[in-house]
Image 1 (cartoon, rainbow, N blue to C red):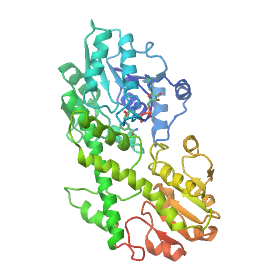
Image 2: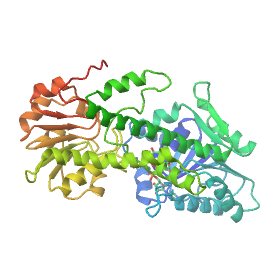
Image 3: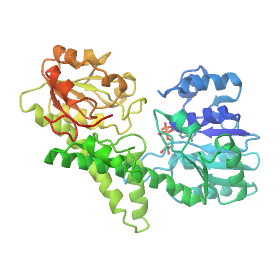
Length: 442
Ligand code: NAD
């Protein structure tokens, strides 16, 4: 089947390359000329494990191509996926749909025959109706179906998530849209990876409901972590004790510095705002949004307070991305933590395994180290923000030896107390009693 994907970001690129891997012929189209020129030369614009190899193999197979021109690629296409960004609007928190509607208009202007237009971007309920109205307004003579196919991949494991999804959701209001999407996903359609068919509005809501629920789990365990700190309990043991209950499950139940990333913060906010506009009070999700904003602010304050009023200090920050195995910095907790430390007058030396390209767009006045140990040299305190695997195996005795001070803030509970205390470091982790080791058995 011939497919066009409009928007070659994390979702568009992964979807495009995986569709090509399924055997379809895919043209990925993006307005960003630099990105497309790079991709044509085999340069992958994002860090995502396994992506580079799959893109190169798919280009080689002749099934994947890149272009800045929709018009040159749309002829004979069965399905056109919209995978452009839907960031939060700065003025009111609603999803900003300008890129989606611009893509819909351009698709309408360039269609040469009947087609299925698929929204993969995360969009508020009713957006499919608006996309359909835009396209029908421009091209009333064409047979079109507009389908919702929200994406659930996680950055860091995007290829695997796309190829082995827990489910695929297809929201179609007609048989044609439903059948075309069924055929596209045929290679992964099995009882273990079911395709859930719904109407279009329901599919749009499934995406927001899923993200809001996962954000709630994280927000919930972070509040339990606060309680653990106040009463001397251990949040990792609580997580294990809760997570073994099959009704709850262990995933998205690790206490930390608050969720970030390109999805949960904007999608929870957009859900609350969309519900408000139809006079529905999403009090739980609203509380999660506030709780997470507070948490990110509190994490920086926690470090600043512990450092005390002892003048400017040098702080090593280990990990800048919002989670490991991605270079995505959007809404990362590191942003709030570093700003709080800078506001208090401290100097930052940071290291992230994905380098400095994305962080440099966000931070100013910080120094970047080439590795974790260099970042820790001469530091008064070390703050581990992202749970990159490489930080789990740090030699803490060596870290202590090269630091000036002895404070270790571990926002991800990567270390056990015995190891840290044996190294001579003073340990601050999340939701765990300071002097009582975790009893957790991995
Ligand atoms: P992104 O910002 O990484 O990429 C969006 C791309 O769209 C950019 O390359 C931009 O140049 C391009 N673009 C914008 N307007 C265009 C147009 N008119 N024509 C062609 N290209 C255009 O975005 P992303 O992170 O891939 O997210 C895309 C959508 O998928 C969002 O709605 C997001 O909420 C959703 N989503 C993201 C993830 C994730 O992990 N990133 C997961 C699931 C769903």
